Length: 521
Image (cartoon, rainbow, N blue to C red):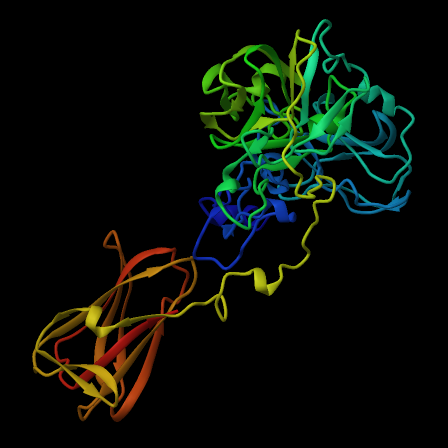
């Protein structure tokens, strides 16, 4: 909004990062509310999470800058806030991001209108206050030139079911029904607890694999002790999933890259493998073309059976999608993996394995860790003991004179129990340090010095980036200090990025200036 207000006197505005990213220089240890999502330290100001899931701010930018004629969208804030109310009543602050001319909000499936609003100036959004919320559905429709062009809807917890709620199941099909003539050995709810579907079929909870004789899942976290084995590889959506009545089975899922896999002990033979997917992220609120956002391979026993799977291209957004593979097992195990991910993350909602041999039984699952996908807590405030070690987040790094590059006549000695670099010649002198910063910030530079001459010493201070750009070129004065070590401070004045820099002190007459160290903080 501030950028738009200044648009007549500015050439543009800049969003710092598109994707949140890991940043070891930060003390922030996490991203997201759930403990299971924390993979920090992370610079978490992106429009997408580190794992590629769009955040509310992504839709805010789309609403402001995507052209409604080409790519209309409407997004109810927020799809991760299904528990926002505990009871019906008059509610405030229902916010919608949209690039459409008008948006109408309903409290049922295109019924029970809460009013139609026109779009305001860029940087403002559609807001409904003092509206009577009776039911568990919020349904938004966006209009361009009077025609409906985009829609979005969410289902709320705790509220009475809306009169037309059943229409959300309108195109549900028998996608989960077992194939006739097959005996199902394994059914797994990837990323979820044990689940019984509408046909009475039981899907086992996702269990981390502990031994070769047991079935279970593996991911990147298995190689680290004291880390939850599902860390940074499970998400969920509470959006309605088209094409099925079993929203929860499809709405909980595992994601990952080449280290995500499932192992199932099986006798050698031929099997039917059913893989179930949905696209939960790309296409929320409407998108004309989400092809290429998520592209990955699927392998059985390390042989690629599906190359370049693109769920959005196959089925669109929030729709149940099924792939059936005929597998031949040799060696007593079936491994399902995702060896190459070309875009986004591989994703799997459920797995079923069947055979025409009625006598095959499943192996035992690995022992449970007592983990429940239905009990993934949020952290309101991160405990200090879980933060990286350190007294505070502004670590000070000391660069001694022994590590500096020197030009001019100098001598090393020990003065008051400290190493002292003494400029002894009356001609020009230079000292420089190569320093690194771990995070974008304003930095202080503190010099430990003595000035044993008769007058203050004026010295040129330069801060130079790795590419040679001079970020600061200033004169600083070291007061007379012949008796004990003193500290002289200067700073960058403004923010500098994480990176490598050179700090240079120089003068035509450095004689009498003694230096011990540079501290960067």
